[in-house]
Length: 305
Image (cartoon, rainbow, N blue to C red):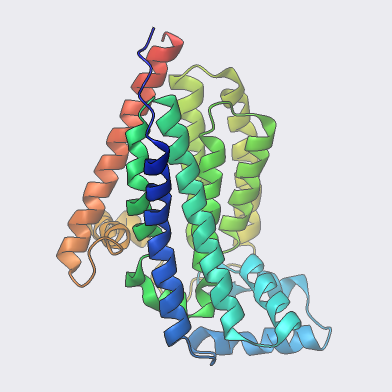
């Protein structure tokens, strides 16, 4: 029988959560001090949609319409709802940004707490403040201060929530439906959401074939079917924006694409240095891969495979 881990003292839990709340508090104070109630950049392209909405002429085609590579159905619905409630008050959009950041942090925190309990390693909770620093990083100040960017926060929060559902200890129907719903929101919030269906399929393959979960094998068929239908609907009338690269550029220039991913993931860790951000992002990817391998080996040992 495995030795029971010594739990952290209650005061340690309190201090951990207080420390995790500090980055959020700093973010809110910065937004309160620096926000400007003026639409900017891409928000002005939203005026035509807003006019049709106010005149009662808005159609689903308007919501599904392509913006660069993206289909912004859910962000557009949220922005239109906010405008209906209080006019075009940019502050309300920034509040949504922060709320979505909290959803992202909550999803990651749930996975960390779950892992801590299953692995009987309560010290893992000490990572919560660091995760909070990443979730509420001020290095993406432009996103926080730009209401239009709620599409990115919505996308990332939905992906995190979907992964939390798919990695639940028991993949019950409610968790599977939650993951599918999160995938729909992620896909129709930002183009990167399409990749969530690939990530989800990989998780189900690991659970079904490497851990021997028969229900995960059955769930994979449902997952791939929904993904195919959703991606097909995404591509209806799709055209490549003239000023943006094609999706195929990632296949033509894989090293350049790897460099982009490293910079994208490492920017919240190291700000102001592209080389530092790249190596930080690369280290994060390798660390995640190592954790996945460790988790698979541990679960296989637990189920006797």
